[in-house]
Structures are given as C-alpha cells and as structure tokens.
Image (cartoon, rainbow, N blue to C red; front, side, top):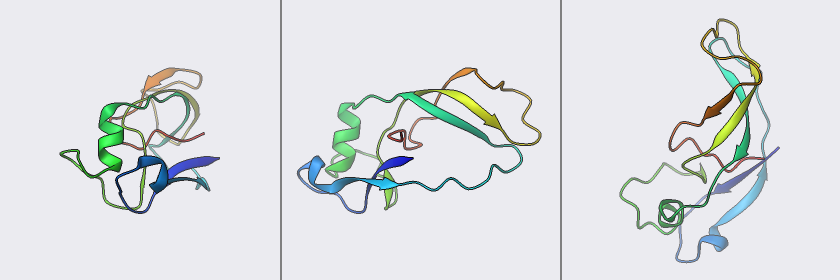
Length: 98
C-alpha cells in the first residue's frame, strides 16, 4: 500500500507531498480495515498543504480529509460493521491511501 504523506508544508502542494510505502499493523480489537474507493482533492486539502487552512494536522501527515471505502476486515468485537459494507471515512483521517 502507498500513502500520500507530507513532512512539511509549502507554497506548492505537489512539492511537499510524496508517495510512501504504508505497512499495515495487525488489526486490534475494535478496529476495521477499510479499502479507500474514492478520496477527492478539495480546496481544504490544498490549503492544508500550504498552511492556509484553519486546522492543521500534526506532521508527518497523510493528505485527504474525505472519502468513501469498503470494509475489508474486522477486528475482534466489531459489531456495527460488516465486511463488504460501504462506509464514509472519518473527516481528517488521511484518506489519500491506495
């Protein structure tokens, strides 16, 4: 898997973001693995990369504030989701992942 990570912010978004290999840890109890199906590039995403957005995540960060995905695996005790279910991703969770 790859993630779109940035270590710093700057004036030109494509100069600060890079594709980085993502190692997935084993699922813990209460967690779900979700495959990202779509994650847009919104003005808020660009403004976050250029320091112009009101809320900035701590660095390093993964780009992407919105997305939709499909549940691939469930950790122990997860009862409110099903494998194969389509879900909205939590806002600001770093959705630019393949």
